[in-house]
Amino acid sequence: PLSSFAPGIDNSTVFTRILDGLLDGYDNRLRPGLGENVTEIKTNIFVTSFGPVSDTEMEYTIDVFFRQSWRDERLRFKGPMEMLALNNLLASNIWTPDTFFLNGKKSIAHNMTTPNKLLRLRDNGTLLYTMRLTISAECPMQLEDFPMDAHACPLKFGSYAYPVSEVVYTWTEGHAKSVVVAEDGSRLNQYHLLGQTAGTEDIHTSRGRYTVMMAHFYLKRKIGYFVIQTYMPCFMTVILSQVSFWLNRESVPARTVFGVTTVLTMTTLSISARNSLPKVAYATAMDWFIAVCYAFVFSALIEFATVNYFTKRSWAWDGKKALEAQHPKVP
Image: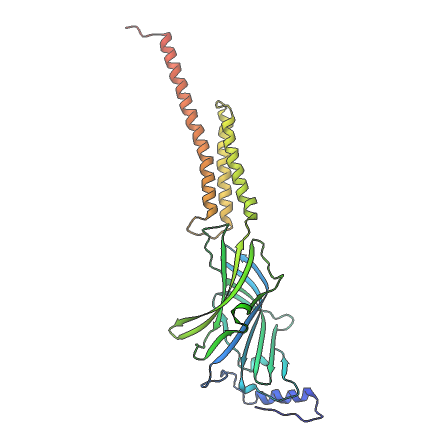
């Protein structure tokens, strides 16, 4: 519908009449262009905060401004302004996309102090719908290289009900510029955020073909924490286990204490290192490092026990021979 305005009437009255006219007879159950055209939803994402990342749950949390734009010919108007800045109240009266996040575990739409939503309507019927969301999404991780590992955490979204024959999603500014992270947006202690990319794929289900929009965030783990907490203690424990070889071989209690203590220390370090990881069925790079250190420490204890056994046995044999020499057998 097209609305007109008369001179001498203030803008608020004009736009009230325009909105009343637009919503008169408007059916928000029907998508724009139903039966005629495919509805195109243009999207982009501005990331205000990225993190934290949970290794044990294999998920990450992200705070975004999620923007969607589409055209609804039923909302065209004529007035003194080309664009109407509206609040979230109108959104419930018009058709909006049924966008959902495929790999989202939990999503929160912020409502303080009012729902954090923005709606802009242009005179040609183009709408811009922006909302602030906090999303916890799955991030599949392959931890074979832990803690020198890198990951690509995806964010996938699309239409819940409409196949590509009815609704199509596109990136507003192409793949290169439609996903932006704020310069101070990283909230990561154990990772470097290397960058992000955007893409699109189609999935086929029993109900038809659907467009899925994908953003990938590339992470590289910081190794400093693990050097201090695991690698250096393991390295020093191995060195300590070798100190027992400098002790007198007859000092059995001292050498035994060294061996047993270092073995128990390695066991504790191994358990502690695993607590920060999910219970995966394969060995990580840190597991192999700890296993090698454990082998050195344990072999030092076994070597001392072996040397001590054969030394005592040799002394006992020499003593027996000396005793036989002093008291030879009489034929």
